Image (cartoon, rainbow, N blue to C red; front, top):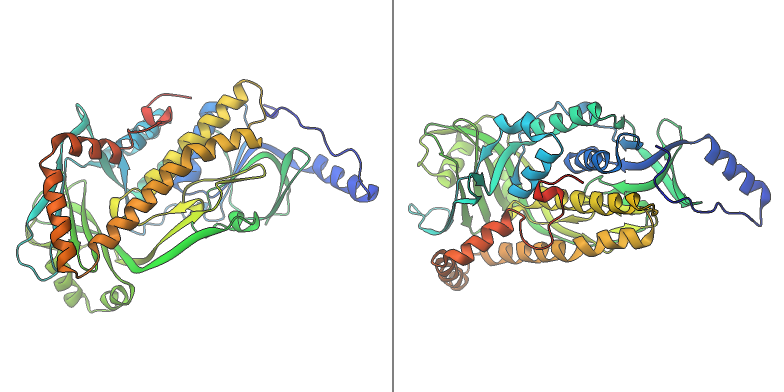
Length: 434
């Protein structure tokens, strides 16, 4: 569509005329896009679709990721999709493709015990929908969601480029990208969706505040004997939470947090002994249980970018923030970034403003930084409160959980917050179109 950006003047004078002429020639030969997205994961693909909806069919949107062809590989990971994210995926035309593969969470049960305890008393339950007939969250296999997003992006005319961005520079009212193919591209806005170890963030010189937890999350899918009836369980154990999250059929996703050295030891065990360790934590409520995907461990930590924006640059998802998975909000926080950025870009473009200007991008940063920091602090605090052997802390937190369980209004607020329906909610997360 030609760029929706209000054009900014090119540099008119240079102390080195020959260099200026070469730069102008390079800009003239470069391919053009309104927005370039680096990273083809769940956040990057969702952003491409959101911008397609907001900017219209004539917008040129390029997405770079050298791993796009590996979208068919199943690593057994699954994600909790909050009600607000489900509304956004519905608005983007993706949810109907994965609805049959998603399992609603009807109930959440929280316990606090030691690993070898036979009985695990329930201290807190969340039961009910955020709206009539709308569960507060769904569990979805990452593979199914990734494949649906890739198909939708291709159908929407997103320029999917299976290559890496090797460098970029902001100049002359745009961003010049160099890629592995050697074909340069000039975009109005660059968005980094390339994960916790974002190379784009690093190249932009944006530092992070980060620390590790000395924990790893072991993830895999299990089959079990009895139906789970949409019940999710989170058992707080001294080494970290052990979550059992429902999937379609008699299957669940397990997120098992252990100290990193113990996680490595567990994964190295013979299958029969690993099965015993699993059963000890999983319990027998659902009958026999067995892994059906290979258990894999991922290190857990906290990271927050010192800025979510740069010169014609925005950070989204794990490139901007990484939090502990104790509340299952990692992907949902990234999708909130997507909805907020797509909305501010669309609003600016529709009134003829440069949607990559500092003023527009600052609106995105203000919208997302407080919410992200608050969630990061909350999950960090919860992990430190529960992942320890202190009997005194255990007594205090169990009293607190019991009090919350007896206050329906407070529990209702927690459910709405977990569903992403509190605060200033972007249009897409309300189920509206841009």
